[in-house]
Length: 502
Image (cartoon, rainbow, N blue to C red; front, side):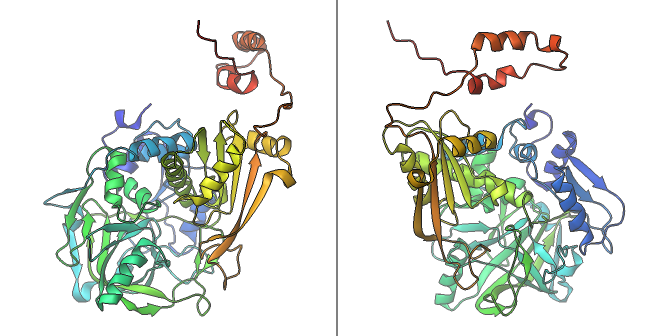
């Protein structure tokens, strides 16, 4: 059932939590919980068990609740997108691709943004008034932004970027910002540096979940994530223009810390337990980071803090990256006119980034290899991807049992593996030495039976009529519930030949 039919449309964090609660996907913790380590550890254990989203209503020393585990399951991602919770990750990503290939929807400016119910300025500024968690034992401190984004703007064109850059609390009025080189926020910052100007910036926590999803998405330079979020919602995102920074900001955010970044002011930041399952940001080893000096804090009445545990897979961040990178890669391949694409998947188990699986209906010799090379040449796949697996059209890209079977029975290491020596990497990849993380090698594993083979292996299939008999008698065998045969018949029986036209 579509979430949209059961609850009011989602336009902020509160309506998302209400939708989760309506679906039995939210658990409230009323026992006092320490923001240092304990909150994260509870959340992580819950996420390992595929548990519900959590709302900590009694955080030690605070009267502000903390929300975690927002997207740990595909069902919750579907609810966030107002889609059918029964959709798989690959199906949900296809829906994302379809929605965002339509016309983008510009945001709508509103007169009374909810986030301006409270304003903190001057000596009263203290970001520690909010319960930013301290996640893991070797973290460098508390992190205000983990489930949020930094808003910046191109000084020449006005292009607004929402970038998911972590922000550590470095002082009452200072937030560290990990703006990785080459990211859109870095492009903006370089322009301000060339001008000799401060860069307006705003750290946003707690918002319509599609804004967080869009901020984590690899979109082309010049495209506003507000427009992407609008296309996903099918309606404009409500925004307002700040008189302090001039930035376009989300009207329904829970908390916004806005101010300015001096591109020439850098501070040590981290370490932080990253989505790779390893720490990054080691003081004295990694490059220092820009800092946001806060000029104003905005927040709603009774604000809600939204955080994510990050850390080892699988948690919110891996699910987000799996969803939106799968969607953008599917869009890339469609745009590149690569034929025969059946399904695409960037699994959350691979941190939602490093490995790709694509199912293809082969039409010519080398077709499956064409697909593998297209992936690593795409906007999405060129950054950080280390491996691509291609499988035939009879296997869904997210069906791991069959993907492994294809690697076992349709793959020959000498014939089917292709190594590319150089490609763009992420500085967060722990599989590379800290001093050399700009470049990675890649591998394409072609787990397809070669199109040009005249004598192909004879695959085992079941008899369709007998399977139908089994389906009809399912409950007579002592099984309870509906027969699973209908959902399996395309996998277990020989594809029916198309009838020739008379």
